[in-house]
Length: 279
Image 1 (cartoon, helix red, strand yellow):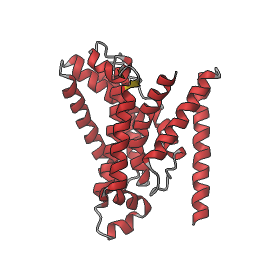
Image 2: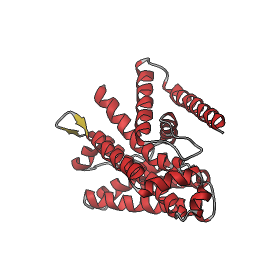
Image 3: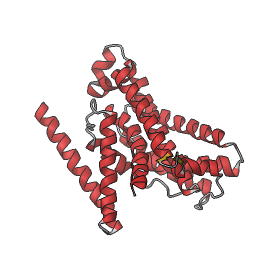
């Protein structure tokens, strides 16, 4: 059970870290679930149907993810459209693209090297998704805390107009955050496909709710400008433990999303209450 819990928490944390970048800029990415499904299906398609080497398939999937993230960022920056709207469109389009690629059936026959990404263990103890999560978390923490780009990302979330007037390329920072969000979701899609040993068209459904809840529980504010990678990891762990306890208590699975939604509502209420007191 501990190995399953840590693996599930690590997978959620990777997605939450990615969407956390957009939340820090006072944006949002609702396409996460569909992007997870698309990432797994695309990699399986490249590797199984096109017989490409796994590294090439993963690289091509990341290129598609970068293109989608850039598309989101351009709409947010150039058309001044809120991320909620453009990513909501992608949520539906990406899920439709998955069905077109798969005809509604899973892509089976993935190689063992692919499955190892989701099922393997380092030294027979540490799940590979945990290793990947640690690497992603360290890179994200370094970017946000120890680079001028990270400081500018926080500044954009705190006051976009003032940050732009100070000479910061606001558009580039926002686009970068949306690219990171989609790439992290695609990475989780690849891990999930390896875990299932197939590219499943229904993978990732509901993940956006879990990831955003983990971010808010971890101290990120929907108003932007605050939060940390460590907080996101803690929030992901809380969600992982909550889900595990729901299963252990033998609660009807139909109640799972209701419970997570209630937790998100409480976290948002607390966040807005805290912000109003600070004003």
